Image 1: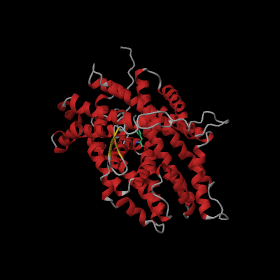
Image 2: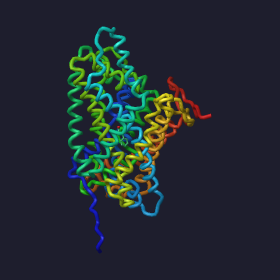
Image 3: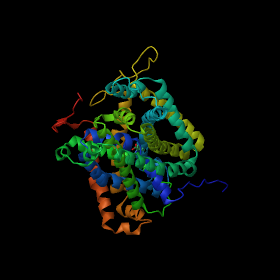
Amino acid sequence: RGILYMKREHWGSQLAFVLAAAGSAVGLGNIWKFPYLAGKNGGGAFLLLYVLCLIIVGLPLMLVEILIGRTAQKNVVSSFREIKPKSPWFLVGFIGLLAGFLILSFYSVVAGWSLEFLYQTAAGTYWFDDTISEQVRNDKVAAIFGNFISDYHRPLMWHCVFMTLCIVVVACGVKNGIEFWSKILMPMLFGLVLILIARVYFLEGSGGGYSFLFSVNWKAIWNPKVVLDAMGQAFFSLSLGMGAMITYGSYLDPERSLPRSAVFVVIADTAVALLAGLAIFPAVFAFNLEPSAGPGLVFSTLPIVFTKMAGGRIFGTLFFASLLIAALTSAISLLEVVVAYFNEEYKMGRVKTTVVLAIIIGLFGIPSALSFVAPSAACPLGMSQMKIPFPGGAKTFFDLVDHMASNLCLPLGGLLMCIFVGWSWGKDKVMKSASQGAEWFATHPLGTIWFNLVRFVAPLIVTLVFIYSFKIISFTNEGTLVFFKGWF
Ligand code: PHE
Protein backbone atom coordinates (compact mmCIF):
# COMPACT_ATOMS: atom_id res chain seq x y z
CA ARG A 1 0.00 0.00 0.00
CA GLY A 2 2.32 2.62 -1.22
CA ILE A 3 5.11 1.29 0.97
CA LEU A 4 8.25 0.52 -0.94
CA TYR A 5 9.73 -2.72 0.33
CA MET A 6 13.41 -2.94 -0.24
CA LYS A 7 14.18 -6.49 -1.21
CA ARG A 8 16.88 -7.98 0.98
CA GLU A 9 20.11 -8.42 -0.90
CA HIS A 10 21.24 -12.00 -1.55
CA TRP A 11 24.49 -13.61 -2.61
CA GLY A 12 24.66 -14.30 -6.32
CA SER A 13 25.57 -17.96 -5.81
CA GLN A 14 26.49 -20.52 -3.21
CA LEU A 15 30.13 -20.05 -4.17
CA ALA A 16 29.86 -16.33 -3.50
CA PHE A 17 28.63 -17.05 0.00
CA VAL A 18 31.36 -19.59 0.66
CA LEU A 19 34.05 -17.17 -0.55
CA ALA A 20 32.69 -14.29 1.50
CA ALA A 21 32.32 -16.43 4.62
CA ALA A 22 35.78 -17.89 4.09
CA GLY A 23 36.99 -14.32 3.63
CA SER A 24 35.59 -13.48 7.03
CA ALA A 25 37.14 -16.54 8.63
CA VAL A 26 40.55 -16.31 6.98
CA GLY A 27 42.27 -13.33 8.52
CA LEU A 28 45.01 -12.16 10.81
CA GLY A 29 43.97 -15.10 12.97
CA ASN A 30 45.27 -17.51 10.34
CA ILE A 31 48.39 -15.84 9.04
CA TRP A 32 49.53 -13.88 12.07
CA LYS A 33 48.12 -15.62 15.14
CA PHE A 34 47.97 -19.30 14.21
CA PRO A 35 51.65 -19.59 13.28
CA TYR A 36 52.82 -17.85 16.43
CA LEU A 37 50.51 -19.89 18.66
CA ALA A 38 51.71 -23.07 16.99
CA GLY A 39 55.30 -21.84 17.33
CA LYS A 40 54.83 -21.09 21.00
CA ASN A 41 52.92 -24.28 21.81
CA GLY A 42 55.12 -26.88 20.23
CA GLY A 43 54.02 -27.09 16.57
CA GLY A 44 52.36 -30.42 15.77
CA ALA A 45 50.78 -30.88 19.18
CA PHE A 46 48.96 -27.60 18.86
CA LEU A 47 47.91 -28.36 15.31
CA LEU A 48 46.36 -31.66 16.34
CA LEU A 49 44.39 -30.13 19.20
CA TYR A 50 43.30 -27.28 17.01
CA VAL A 51 41.85 -29.65 14.43
CA LEU A 52 40.03 -31.55 17.17
CA CYS A 53 38.48 -28.33 18.46
CA LEU A 54 37.41 -27.41 14.95
CA ILE A 55 35.56 -30.68 14.52
CA ILE A 56 33.91 -30.85 17.92
CA VAL A 57 32.96 -27.22 18.41
CA GLY A 58 33.96 -25.07 15.42
CA LEU A 59 32.07 -26.84 12.67
CA PRO A 60 28.87 -27.41 14.67
CA LEU A 61 28.77 -23.77 15.72
CA MET A 62 29.48 -22.59 12.20
CA LEU A 63 26.37 -24.46 11.08
CA VAL A 64 24.39 -23.03 14.00
CA GLU A 65 25.19 -19.46 13.01
CA ILE A 66 24.57 -19.82 9.31
CA LEU A 67 21.32 -21.61 10.12
CA ILE A 68 20.04 -18.84 12.38
CA GLY A 69 20.83 -16.22 9.75
CA ARG A 70 19.41 -18.08 6.79
CA THR A 71 16.21 -18.97 8.62
CA ALA A 72 15.52 -15.48 9.95
CA GLN A 73 16.83 -13.44 7.00
CA LYS A 74 17.59 -10.60 9.42
CA ASN A 75 20.52 -8.85 11.06
CA VAL A 76 22.14 -10.32 14.15
CA VAL A 77 19.72 -8.79 16.66
CA SER A 78 16.47 -9.21 14.75
CA SER A 79 17.30 -12.78 13.77
CA PHE A 80 16.67 -13.86 17.34
CA ARG A 81 13.51 -11.74 17.50
CA GLU A 82 12.27 -13.32 14.30
CA ILE A 83 12.78 -16.90 15.45
CA LYS A 84 11.74 -16.43 19.10
CA PRO A 85 9.59 -13.31 19.34
CA LYS A 86 8.93 -11.81 22.76
CA SER A 87 11.90 -13.49 24.37
CA PRO A 88 15.14 -12.01 25.65
CA TRP A 89 17.22 -13.98 23.12
CA PHE A 90 17.75 -10.87 21.00
CA LEU A 91 20.19 -9.73 23.69
CA VAL A 92 22.64 -12.27 22.27
CA GLY A 93 22.61 -10.11 19.16
CA PHE A 94 23.75 -7.13 21.19
CA ILE A 95 26.68 -9.12 22.54
CA GLY A 96 27.55 -9.77 18.91
CA LEU A 97 27.31 -6.09 17.98
CA LEU A 98 29.54 -5.19 20.89
CA ALA A 99 32.08 -7.85 19.92
CA GLY A 100 32.11 -6.66 16.31
CA PHE A 101 32.67 -3.10 17.42
CA LEU A 102 35.50 -4.00 19.81
CA ILE A 103 37.28 -6.46 17.52
CA LEU A 104 37.24 -4.17 14.51
CA SER A 105 38.70 -1.32 16.56
CA PHE A 106 41.96 -3.15 17.30
CA TYR A 107 41.91 -5.43 14.27
CA SER A 108 42.25 -2.39 12.08
CA VAL A 109 45.30 -1.29 14.06
CA VAL A 110 47.03 -4.63 13.45
CA ALA A 111 45.94 -4.59 9.82
CA GLY A 112 47.62 -1.18 9.67
CA TRP A 113 50.87 -2.83 10.73
CA SER A 114 50.65 -5.09 7.71
CA LEU A 115 50.18 -2.02 5.51
CA GLU A 116 53.37 -0.52 6.96
CA PHE A 117 55.31 -3.70 6.31
CA LEU A 118 53.84 -4.05 2.86
CA TYR A 119 55.13 -0.57 2.12
CA GLN A 120 58.55 -1.01 3.76
CA THR A 121 59.15 -4.38 2.11
CA ALA A 122 58.08 -3.23 -1.33
CA ALA A 123 60.26 -0.13 -0.94
CA GLY A 124 63.15 -2.27 0.33
CA THR A 125 63.83 0.00 3.30
CA TYR A 126 65.36 -2.65 5.56
CA TRP A 127 67.96 -4.21 3.29
CA PHE A 128 71.05 -2.86 5.02
CA ASP A 129 74.39 -3.10 3.21
CA ASP A 130 76.83 -5.70 4.45
CA THR A 131 79.44 -3.34 5.82
CA ILE A 132 77.86 -4.13 9.16
CA SER A 133 77.93 -7.63 10.59
CA GLU A 134 75.10 -10.05 10.00
CA GLN A 135 74.10 -10.05 13.65
CA VAL A 136 73.82 -6.29 13.73
CA ARG A 137 71.80 -6.30 10.54
CA ASN A 138 69.41 -8.90 11.96
CA ASP A 139 68.96 -6.89 15.12
CA LYS A 140 68.28 -3.75 13.14
CA VAL A 141 65.61 -5.46 11.07
CA ALA A 142 64.00 -7.03 14.11
CA ALA A 143 63.90 -3.62 15.82
CA ILE A 144 61.90 -2.00 13.03
CA PHE A 145 58.63 -3.42 14.29
CA GLY A 146 59.17 -2.24 17.87
CA ASN A 147 60.20 1.23 16.73
CA PHE A 148 57.26 1.47 14.40
CA ILE A 149 54.55 0.59 16.90
CA SER A 150 56.08 2.73 19.62
CA ASP A 151 55.60 5.80 17.45
CA TYR A 152 52.14 7.17 16.82
CA HIS A 153 52.09 8.92 13.44
CA ARG A 154 52.37 6.00 11.11
CA PRO A 155 50.30 3.45 13.04
CA LEU A 156 47.46 5.96 13.23
CA MET A 157 47.81 6.88 9.58
CA TRP A 158 47.63 3.23 8.46
CA HIS A 159 44.73 2.61 10.83
CA CYS A 160 42.82 5.37 9.01
CA VAL A 161 43.83 4.04 5.60
CA PHE A 162 42.64 0.57 6.51
CA MET A 163 39.29 1.75 7.90
CA THR A 164 38.79 3.70 4.69
CA LEU A 165 39.31 0.54 2.65
CA CYS A 166 36.66 -1.18 4.78
CA ILE A 167 34.24 1.70 4.23
CA VAL A 168 34.70 1.54 0.48
CA VAL A 169 33.86 -2.16 0.33
CA VAL A 170 30.97 -2.25 2.79
CA ALA A 171 29.32 0.94 1.51
CA CYS A 172 28.90 -0.72 -1.89
CA GLY A 173 26.65 -3.36 -0.37
CA VAL A 174 26.49 -7.11 -0.15
CA LYS A 175 26.63 -7.95 -3.83
CA ASN A 176 28.62 -5.11 -5.31
CA GLY A 177 30.90 -4.69 -2.34
CA ILE A 178 31.48 -7.77 -0.21
CA GLU A 179 30.73 -10.40 -2.85
CA PHE A 180 32.61 -8.58 -5.59
CA TRP A 181 35.78 -8.18 -3.56
CA SER A 182 35.65 -11.62 -1.94
CA LYS A 183 35.50 -13.22 -5.37
CA ILE A 184 38.63 -11.38 -6.45
CA LEU A 185 40.63 -11.34 -3.23
CA MET A 186 40.11 -14.86 -1.91
CA PRO A 187 41.43 -16.72 -4.96
CA MET A 188 44.28 -14.21 -5.06
CA LEU A 189 45.10 -14.93 -1.43
CA PHE A 190 45.24 -18.68 -2.07
CA GLY A 191 47.45 -18.13 -5.09
CA LEU A 192 49.87 -15.87 -3.22
CA VAL A 193 50.23 -18.24 -0.30
CA LEU A 194 50.87 -21.17 -2.65
CA ILE A 195 53.62 -19.20 -4.41
CA LEU A 196 55.23 -18.50 -1.04
CA ILE A 197 55.10 -22.16 -0.03
CA ALA A 198 56.73 -23.18 -3.27
CA ARG A 199 59.51 -20.61 -2.82
CA VAL A 200 60.21 -21.62 0.75
CA TYR A 201 60.31 -25.31 -0.16
CA PHE A 202 63.45 -24.71 -2.19
CA LEU A 203 65.35 -23.04 0.62
CA GLU A 204 68.21 -25.08 1.93
CA GLY A 205 67.55 -26.34 5.44
CA SER A 206 63.80 -25.78 5.32
CA GLY A 207 63.09 -29.39 6.33
CA GLY A 208 63.17 -28.58 10.03
CA GLY A 209 60.10 -26.41 9.56
CA TYR A 210 58.01 -29.26 8.22
CA SER A 211 58.97 -31.61 11.00
CA PHE A 212 58.29 -28.86 13.53
CA LEU A 213 54.78 -28.34 12.21
CA PHE A 214 53.88 -31.98 11.78
CA SER A 215 55.65 -33.92 14.48
CA VAL A 216 53.59 -34.22 17.60
CA ASN A 217 55.24 -33.93 20.96
CA TRP A 218 52.77 -35.99 22.98
CA LYS A 219 53.88 -34.49 26.23
CA ALA A 220 52.85 -31.03 25.07
CA ILE A 221 49.34 -32.27 24.30
CA TRP A 222 48.48 -32.98 27.90
CA ASN A 223 49.00 -29.38 28.87
CA PRO A 224 45.51 -27.89 29.44
CA LYS A 225 46.88 -24.46 28.64
CA VAL A 226 47.62 -25.56 25.10
CA VAL A 227 44.18 -27.16 24.78
CA LEU A 228 42.47 -23.95 25.77
CA ASP A 229 44.66 -21.80 23.52
CA ALA A 230 43.61 -24.06 20.67
CA MET A 231 39.94 -23.67 21.57
CA GLY A 232 40.06 -19.89 21.76
CA GLN A 233 41.89 -19.75 18.48
CA ALA A 234 39.24 -21.96 16.82
CA PHE A 235 36.56 -19.45 17.81
CA PHE A 236 38.40 -16.37 16.69
CA SER A 237 39.71 -17.90 13.51
CA LEU A 238 36.31 -19.12 12.34
CA SER A 239 34.68 -15.74 13.16
CA LEU A 240 32.28 -17.48 15.53
CA GLY A 241 30.30 -16.22 18.49
CA MET A 242 29.49 -12.70 17.32
CA GLY A 243 27.07 -13.19 14.47
CA ALA A 244 29.35 -12.57 11.50
CA MET A 245 28.11 -15.87 10.11
CA ILE A 246 24.52 -15.07 11.12
CA THR A 247 24.74 -11.86 9.14
CA TYR A 248 26.38 -13.48 6.10
CA GLY A 249 23.96 -16.43 6.38
CA SER A 250 21.05 -14.03 6.29
CA TYR A 251 21.97 -13.12 2.71
CA LEU A 252 21.62 -16.76 1.63
CA ASP A 253 18.62 -17.98 -0.32
CA PRO A 254 16.72 -20.54 1.77
CA GLU A 255 17.21 -23.35 -0.74
CA ARG A 256 21.01 -23.48 -0.47
CA SER A 257 22.57 -26.47 1.28
CA LEU A 258 23.93 -25.44 4.67
CA PRO A 259 25.99 -28.39 5.91
CA ARG A 260 28.07 -28.36 2.76
CA SER A 261 28.75 -24.63 2.92
CA ALA A 262 29.72 -24.85 6.59
CA VAL A 263 32.18 -27.64 5.84
CA PHE A 264 33.72 -25.70 2.96
CA VAL A 265 34.23 -22.60 5.07
CA VAL A 266 35.87 -24.56 7.89
CA ILE A 267 38.12 -26.40 5.44
CA ALA A 268 39.16 -23.18 3.71
CA ASP A 269 39.98 -21.53 7.01
CA THR A 270 42.01 -24.48 8.26
CA ALA A 271 43.77 -24.81 4.93
CA VAL A 272 44.98 -21.22 5.01
CA ALA A 273 46.19 -21.51 8.60
CA LEU A 274 48.12 -24.64 7.61
CA LEU A 275 49.42 -23.11 4.42
CA ALA A 276 50.59 -20.06 6.36
CA GLY A 277 52.44 -22.43 8.68
CA LEU A 278 53.97 -24.15 5.64
CA ALA A 279 55.12 -20.82 4.27
CA ILE A 280 56.52 -19.50 7.53
CA PHE A 281 58.18 -22.29 9.53
CA PRO A 282 60.38 -23.79 6.83
CA ALA A 283 61.73 -20.31 6.12
CA VAL A 284 62.29 -19.59 9.80
CA PHE A 285 64.15 -22.88 10.20
CA ALA A 286 66.20 -22.45 7.04
CA PHE A 287 67.80 -19.36 8.56
CA ASN A 288 68.10 -20.74 12.07
CA LEU A 289 65.68 -18.29 13.61
CA GLU A 290 63.32 -18.86 16.54
CA PRO A 291 59.85 -20.30 15.74
CA SER A 292 58.54 -19.27 19.16
CA ALA A 293 58.92 -15.50 18.84
CA GLY A 294 55.24 -14.91 19.69
CA PRO A 295 53.24 -12.01 18.22
CA GLY A 296 56.41 -10.61 16.62
CA LEU A 297 56.96 -13.74 14.53
CA VAL A 298 55.42 -12.26 11.41
CA PHE A 299 56.58 -8.67 11.89
CA SER A 300 60.10 -9.07 13.25
CA THR A 301 61.29 -12.57 12.41
CA LEU A 302 59.96 -12.83 8.87
CA PRO A 303 61.50 -9.56 7.63
CA ILE A 304 64.90 -11.02 8.60
CA VAL A 305 64.06 -14.07 6.53
CA PHE A 306 63.19 -11.89 3.55
CA THR A 307 66.48 -10.02 3.69
CA LYS A 308 68.37 -13.30 3.45
CA MET A 309 66.36 -15.02 0.79
CA ALA A 310 67.01 -14.65 -2.93
CA GLY A 311 64.06 -12.67 -4.28
CA GLY A 312 63.15 -11.80 -0.70
CA ARG A 313 61.88 -8.36 -1.54
CA ILE A 314 59.34 -9.72 -4.03
CA PHE A 315 58.29 -12.63 -1.86
CA GLY A 316 58.14 -10.46 1.23
CA THR A 317 55.90 -8.04 -0.60
CA LEU A 318 53.66 -10.89 -1.67
CA PHE A 319 53.53 -12.12 1.90
CA PHE A 320 52.41 -8.81 3.38
CA ALA A 321 49.96 -8.37 0.53
CA SER A 322 48.41 -11.70 1.53
CA LEU A 323 48.24 -10.57 5.12
CA LEU A 324 46.50 -7.38 4.09
CA ILE A 325 43.99 -9.18 1.88
CA ALA A 326 43.19 -11.65 4.63
CA ALA A 327 42.71 -8.84 7.12
CA LEU A 328 40.52 -6.80 4.79
CA THR A 329 38.01 -9.55 3.98
CA SER A 330 37.66 -10.25 7.72
CA ALA A 331 37.33 -6.63 8.73
CA ILE A 332 34.53 -6.04 6.25
CA SER A 333 32.54 -8.84 7.87
CA LEU A 334 33.03 -7.23 11.27
CA LEU A 335 31.82 -3.91 9.92
CA GLU A 336 28.92 -5.50 8.04
CA VAL A 337 27.51 -7.04 11.24
CA VAL A 338 27.15 -3.59 12.79
CA VAL A 339 26.15 -1.82 9.58
CA ALA A 340 23.42 -4.37 8.77
CA TYR A 341 21.83 -3.77 12.16
CA PHE A 342 21.75 0.03 12.04
CA ASN A 343 20.91 0.06 8.37
CA GLU A 344 17.86 -2.16 8.83
CA GLU A 345 16.61 -1.09 12.21
CA TYR A 346 17.05 2.63 11.89
CA LYS A 347 16.49 2.90 8.15
CA MET A 348 19.62 4.93 7.63
CA GLY A 349 21.07 4.64 4.14
CA ARG A 350 23.86 2.09 3.76
CA VAL A 351 26.55 4.57 2.77
CA LYS A 352 25.77 6.92 5.62
CA THR A 353 25.55 4.09 8.16
CA THR A 354 28.85 2.67 7.00
CA VAL A 355 30.73 5.94 7.14
CA VAL A 356 29.35 7.00 10.52
CA LEU A 357 29.97 3.62 12.19
CA ALA A 358 33.43 3.21 10.72
CA ILE A 359 34.43 6.63 12.02
CA ILE A 360 33.15 5.85 15.51
CA ILE A 361 34.90 2.46 15.54
CA GLY A 362 38.06 4.01 14.11
CA LEU A 363 38.12 6.63 16.87
CA PHE A 364 37.67 3.94 19.47
CA GLY A 365 40.68 2.17 17.95
CA ILE A 366 43.01 5.11 18.60
CA PRO A 367 43.81 4.18 22.23
CA SER A 368 44.63 0.68 20.97
CA ALA A 369 47.12 2.12 18.52
CA LEU A 370 48.57 4.27 21.32
CA SER A 371 48.91 1.28 23.65
CA PHE A 372 52.45 0.70 22.42
CA VAL A 373 53.52 4.34 22.62
CA ALA A 374 55.39 5.66 25.65
CA PRO A 375 54.00 8.97 26.92
CA SER A 376 56.24 11.87 25.94
CA ALA A 377 56.07 15.59 25.34
CA ALA A 378 55.27 14.94 21.68
CA CYS A 379 52.60 12.39 22.47
CA PRO A 380 51.25 12.81 25.99
CA LEU A 381 48.53 10.33 25.15
CA GLY A 382 50.98 7.43 24.80
CA MET A 383 49.40 4.65 26.82
CA SER A 384 52.07 1.97 27.04
CA GLN A 385 52.48 2.63 30.71
CA MET A 386 48.80 2.70 31.48
CA LYS A 387 47.71 -0.66 32.80
CA ILE A 388 44.02 -1.09 33.39
CA PRO A 389 43.28 -3.30 36.40
CA PHE A 390 41.47 -6.47 35.46
CA PRO A 391 40.79 -9.79 37.18
CA GLY A 392 43.66 -12.02 36.24
CA GLY A 393 46.15 -9.18 35.79
CA ALA A 394 46.26 -5.55 34.62
CA LYS A 395 46.28 -4.97 30.87
CA THR A 396 47.02 -2.28 28.33
CA PHE A 397 44.02 -0.83 26.52
CA PHE A 398 44.82 -2.89 23.43
CA ASP A 399 45.05 -6.13 25.39
CA LEU A 400 41.95 -5.31 27.37
CA VAL A 401 39.79 -4.74 24.29
CA ASP A 402 41.16 -7.87 22.66
CA HIS A 403 40.55 -9.86 25.83
CA MET A 404 37.00 -8.54 26.38
CA ALA A 405 36.03 -9.31 22.83
CA SER A 406 37.90 -12.53 22.06
CA ASN A 407 37.71 -14.15 25.46
CA LEU A 408 34.46 -12.78 26.85
CA CYS A 409 32.05 -11.80 24.09
CA LEU A 410 32.90 -14.53 21.58
CA PRO A 411 32.70 -17.55 23.89
CA LEU A 412 29.65 -16.11 25.67
CA GLY A 413 27.90 -15.40 22.36
CA GLY A 414 28.81 -18.86 21.08
CA LEU A 415 27.60 -20.54 24.23
CA LEU A 416 24.26 -18.74 24.13
CA MET A 417 23.79 -19.53 20.45
CA CYS A 418 24.34 -23.23 21.16
CA ILE A 419 21.82 -23.13 23.99
CA PHE A 420 19.40 -21.24 21.78
CA VAL A 421 19.52 -23.85 19.02
CA GLY A 422 20.01 -26.90 21.24
CA TRP A 423 17.42 -26.13 23.91
CA SER A 424 15.11 -23.28 23.02
CA TRP A 425 14.24 -23.21 19.34
CA GLY A 426 12.84 -26.78 19.30
CA LYS A 427 14.54 -29.81 17.81
CA ASP A 428 11.92 -30.44 15.11
CA LYS A 429 12.02 -26.89 13.86
CA VAL A 430 15.79 -26.82 13.94
CA MET A 431 16.17 -30.02 11.95
CA LYS A 432 13.50 -28.97 9.48
CA SER A 433 15.18 -25.67 8.83
CA ALA A 434 18.69 -27.12 8.73
CA SER A 435 17.73 -29.73 6.15
CA GLN A 436 16.12 -27.25 3.80
CA GLY A 437 18.23 -27.53 0.67
CA ALA A 438 19.85 -30.70 2.09
CA GLU A 439 17.00 -33.16 2.77
CA TRP A 440 19.37 -35.97 3.73
CA PHE A 441 20.52 -34.06 6.80
CA ALA A 442 17.26 -34.53 8.75
CA THR A 443 17.55 -38.31 8.96
CA HIS A 444 21.28 -38.86 8.54
CA PRO A 445 23.35 -39.81 11.61
CA LEU A 446 25.49 -36.74 10.92
CA GLY A 447 22.43 -34.58 11.55
CA THR A 448 21.85 -36.26 14.90
CA ILE A 449 25.51 -36.02 15.82
CA TRP A 450 25.50 -32.32 14.97
CA PHE A 451 22.43 -31.62 17.09
CA ASN A 452 23.86 -33.43 20.08
CA LEU A 453 27.20 -31.70 19.79
CA VAL A 454 25.35 -28.38 19.82
CA ARG A 455 23.09 -29.42 22.67
CA PHE A 456 25.60 -31.02 25.02
CA VAL A 457 29.23 -31.06 24.01
CA ALA A 458 29.84 -27.57 22.66
CA PRO A 459 28.21 -25.72 25.59
CA LEU A 460 30.22 -27.77 28.03
CA ILE A 461 33.54 -27.16 26.31
CA VAL A 462 32.86 -23.47 25.75
CA THR A 463 31.97 -23.05 29.41
CA LEU A 464 35.35 -24.55 30.29
CA VAL A 465 37.16 -22.15 27.98
CA PHE A 466 35.25 -19.34 29.52
CA ILE A 467 36.14 -20.24 33.06
CA TYR A 468 39.71 -20.50 31.93
CA SER A 469 39.94 -17.20 30.14
CA PHE A 470 38.87 -15.39 33.28
CA LYS A 471 41.48 -17.22 35.24
CA ILE A 472 38.81 -18.68 37.48
CA ILE A 473 40.89 -21.73 36.84
CA SER A 474 44.30 -21.59 35.23
CA PHE A 475 47.34 -23.73 34.79
CA THR A 476 51.01 -23.13 35.34
CA ASN A 477 53.46 -23.90 32.56
CA GLU A 478 53.94 -27.31 34.10
CA GLY A 479 50.19 -27.96 33.95
CA THR A 480 49.34 -27.56 37.65
CA LEU A 481 45.82 -26.35 38.38
CA VAL A 482 45.42 -22.93 40.08
CA PHE A 483 42.22 -21.10 41.10
CA PHE A 484 41.58 -17.36 40.67
CA LYS A 485 45.15 -16.61 39.71
CA GLY A 486 45.86 -12.88 40.02
CA TRP A 487 42.29 -12.06 41.02
CA PHE A 488 42.89 -10.78 44.50
N1 PHE B 1 38.28 -14.79 11.74
C1 PHE B 1 39.03 -13.58 11.69
C2 PHE B 1 40.51 -13.95 11.70
O1 PHE B 1 40.87 -15.11 11.75
C3 PHE B 1 38.71 -12.62 12.78
C4 PHE B 1 37.25 -12.40 12.97
C5 PHE B 1 36.65 -12.73 14.17
C6 PHE B 1 36.48 -11.87 11.94
C7 PHE B 1 35.29 -12.56 14.35
C8 PHE B 1 35.12 -11.70 12.10
C9 PHE B 1 34.53 -12.06 13.30
O2 PHE B 1 41.35 -13.10 11.67
